[in-house]
Structure formats: structure tokens, C-alpha cells
Length: 280
Image (cartoon, rainbow, N blue to C red):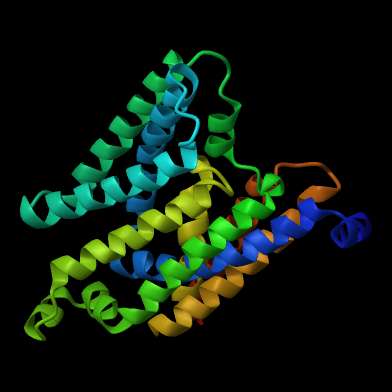
């Protein structure tokens, strides 16, 4: 740990990684709390995998057709929002089960991404980084982009807090109060999509579900008030990311993987502790 703290003082990579973890934790704490409360955690996984299709398409256009002004990140944002709107439209208007739509988008997104990757000349290291993530490679430019998306996500989440709270906890009650459930549900899905895009650039598609849901899941065990769950989830997420970066530094382990392992262990410990308390 001594080497890590020494590097923290002089290495811009470590400093950016810690700051990135803090910024991402704010959005994850808020949106993750809504997702866990509404019980739509796997939507994050579906959107994350659908994002690969958008990134694969943009990468293909970059290399084959010279569309260099469009970056894979832009494809990720657009495809994530499209996935969110499809899930919302089908589940609300066509009365289909959400899990069926989620599974379909999960598979189609991955398939489209793989097709475009296979047709793109060369080894797509950029796309591999989106798959598995590397929080230590976040640049100052990325930080500003993440901060901008963070402000947007948190601003919308706070502006519609009461409406989203009603939609998450009691949809029928929200309808009786005159709340446009469909509209705010779509807002929730779009917030989830934007947060997923944030996480994809940090920890990768493979681990996006865990970091969005585990801190909020732990917080929901400790509190029943949504605003408190958001605060606790943000604190837990900051702790997991910072600790994961610190513990992975000296043994040179993948920081994203260590972050998720720590979060998973804490989640299991909290669940066991809750069970033991009930048995007493």
C-alpha cells in the first residue's frame, strides 16, 4: 500500500482513476438505487451488451469508410438510448414481458457487435477495452465527458425524484395520483442507459451489471428510504472503486476485476449478517 500512496501523489493515471471512481459512483448510487428498487437490474446488462453493437458499427465505419469524426463512445450513447426506448415501448405499449425483451436485446446487440468486429480489419483493441475496461487508462478528456454526463444524470434524477419514487414503489398509486407512469419509466430507462455508458468506458461491459447494482443492493439491505439508499450506495461505490484500485496496484491486477470482487464479497457479508440478525 505504501507504493500505491506514493504513486497517488505523483501519477496522473492513479489520480484520474480515483477521481473517475468518485464521479461514476455518484451516477451509480442514484440510478442504481432506482434500478434495484424497481427490480430491473438486468436491464443494465441488456443495454450494456446492446451497446457493443453500436460501438462495433462506429468502429467499422471508422476503419473501412474513414468516418473518423465519430468515436465508438458516440455509438455507445446512441445505442444505449435506443435500447432503453425499445425496452420501454415494448413493455408498456405491447404488453410484453420485460425479461423477454431484455434477453432479445442482449443477444442481438452482442451478435451485431461481433459481426461488425469480424468485418473490421485489424485487432480492435479499443473495443476490447470497452469489453473488459481499464480504469487506469481514463484521460483528462474522459473525465470532463464523464462529469458532463454525471451532471445530466443526477440533475434529471433529482428533478423528477418524487415521480420516479412513485413509479418505482407503487405504479398503481402513481397512476391514481395522475402521474404519467409511461413517461417517467422511459426517463428511468434513459438514465440507466446513460449510466451504463459511463460504466462501459470505466469497467467494461462484462462488469457493468455488478457495479451498478451491488452498491445499491447493499444499501437497500441497510435502509428502506430511497434517498438514504442513494447516499449509502454512492459511499459504498466510492469505497469499492478506491479500495479496488489501491489493492490492485502492487500485485498488478486488473483494477476493475478487483473492484467487483470486493463489492461482491461485501454484498455476501451483508446478506449473511442480515440473516444472522434475523435468527437472533
